[in-house]
Image (cartoon, rainbow, N blue to C red; front, side, top):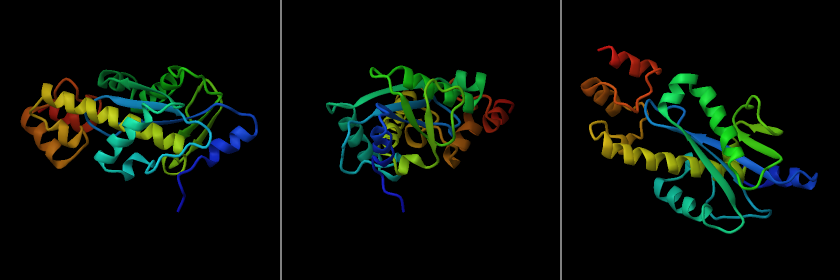
Length: 205
């Protein structure tokens, strides 16, 4: 079982490669709402109790860690959102890659290497190491996963107030049974991803 640590970051730093950022996304799978990506540079030797892959944490724990990660001295971070219309225009994979590149560009300190959760990102502006499941063993990627996830969840709570018929605050736009029921009853709303087959199906009803 891999341990979430700074092993990959430290290995690069030892070869003179610094700074190094971790990058992750949230929201590729939902039928509605924006997609988020975040980039995080952690200081050498960084430790934060409980920091791990956002999917392994409760919402309460994610919120607590988000507050710490975004306010602690020495951490450099940036996040970017891609609206549903852009996901529809270019497709979800290209929107994810664009968001990751934009998160890198928005950092106040420019990393010379990035650790990316998942597969390599085409045309990335600096060298990258793609780590499948990286949010479970790179603390930088784990931090990025938490920031992206919390910011997206908060956005979906706001959208729930704007479109109260869909239950966005509960399922966050993911394809749950409740969400499908709401789509069947009300049809898609403006933040649904019209290019996704389940949404297109109900748009034609």
